Image 1 (tube, rainbow over the protein chains, first blue to last red):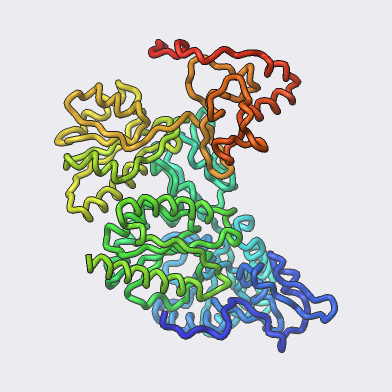
Image 2 (image 1 turned 135 degrees about the vertical axis):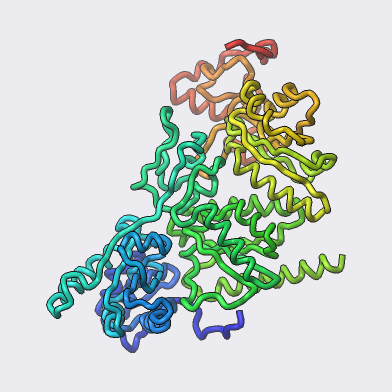
Length: 389
Length: 213
């Protein structure tokens, strides 16, 4: 918002001065965004294919890749500040795609106090970061990765598994015990309340993964192995019979009212896909804006948007991934459709301008700020127009 | 599935404006998507927001009934919630408001939906399309499983009309010509002779007004 424009507006860059052209990044990139020029041997990153998972960044032996979000330096800075705040020497690094709430993490790892570090894909965590964290006095590291086939970036979770295995072998030889770093896997999935289900099949109609099966006897049955946790079914269930781990309706309602209560007018509440925007670790500082991360923009619920408007939000902004970037089989396209329908209804009661749906690509770190700025301008114009009426 | 669409909100607001305490009744029955509790809660919020803007202090109650077309269920489920209710806003298809009107002769009931058709659900693109007109005299056996009464814009039982262009209807270039589809289908089935058969005009007497089960 008040930040000066960065020199370059891409999230990942290859620094030609350091690059040894070893091609490790090329072989690991899940999206074939990195290639080697046949003639010059130069490593080339096609940013429009890049999904900003950070796997190349964590794997580059020459440190030739620059990444804007959650680079090693900023993660260590975060740790420095977080250690006294959480009064703990235990670090829990988790992918935000699989991270439950505090209570859930305590249960998974059996720890009561820890420093939480939530990152978009643990694939960006290098051995160097883990070792440096240990050097600063962290005595136990837990990593929570998504189940391997649930990983939003295909290779992030399996790669981290292998990395931790190798690192633990090394550390064992150095006398750190058998498991200096503990890795567990977890996935957030849909929950069905059979008592509320009306067996309409709406979830089966919309699920991009074919996880819900509508059966003539027994109604809806979810194949939880197929569920990829986008939350689309939850947002369209006519009977409120579905909930998404960590993004339950009541929990989101509580967060909405808490955030709106601490904000200053004019208030803009952002619902953002957690894969579209990678927020800075130091939190939000603008008192007029607060954001709620969702598992995918498809989890955004007309119910919650209306609740926010009723509770004093002047505007609601939905930040979704462009459909091509959607890590949930195009579920963001569905979100756009539903938000279009809601906007049409809001238009009918003169509130359509209070809702703004936009696409934000994580490879362009300034896009959300630009959209927000534009939305603020239009809200301001709207307020002036209303005031003069 | 019965396919409905929400009425324009100003029409709904207009219809409920003489009342203050309004019960919004969803229906878990056969509309697609079902206009159940979620739809009722969402409509409540929209109407409250609208009411606030126009200085109307509506008091909404919200519930969802299993099947508004079942008069026994609707009577027993609705009755305990009607105290102080001045009007019911029904989210069901056209049958729901009529059931409620019959059950509660003194209670105004207002439709929130426009009922459109009996539709097919198409997951690709999430579309719902008109497939059956409930004419009471099914001729799908003669037309390759494609209903011309419903899908031909002119409802022709002996087509095609000659107005189609590249398989699309002259009424709407997005819409398939039903008779072209029927021709292709019969050709594949090796039953093109069926298209030469003359089908008499629709028999309106075939549609029953009451059936017992």
